[in-house]
Image 1 (tube, one colour):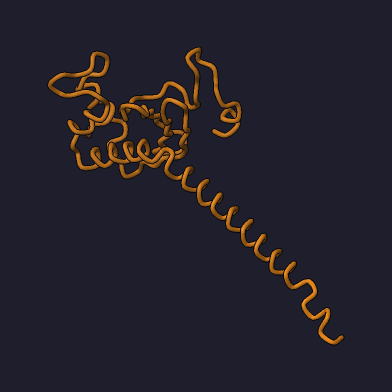
Image 2 (cartoon, one colour; image 1 turned 120 degrees about the vertical axis):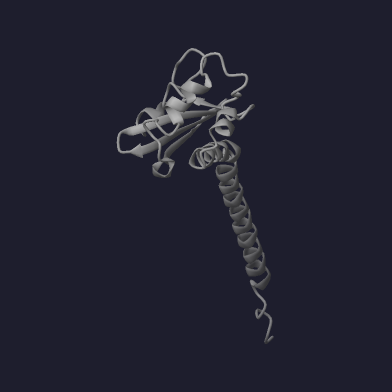
Length: 159
């Protein structure tokens, strides 16, 4: 009976190889999906802040003011164009926008908080609303709910 056990376990090894490939493929697809979600989740909001700083760098202050949901001909009630120029114009505390870099981004349910750093300790907190993509100053450096409570406990420790 030569050859009786020659093929013993071959089908089991083939099945095991197929299961391993299937599991590795699923794990790879899951890793790609998680990376895609992490990268694209706040893409539009991050792009809006980048566009804002590009407009400031090009000294297109009226267009940058429009990203705040305001218009120089019809200014916002609490943030007129003159105040905007005091904060972001050529005579502002931060006239050189090339020194600005986003130190941290916090993704909240209603929007995104970007902590922009000009120098160590010199930060500006910007908030981008998810629905309208309007930029504003953020009063908090972490996500809060309607009652003003921190919604992400770990944000206290990772500034």
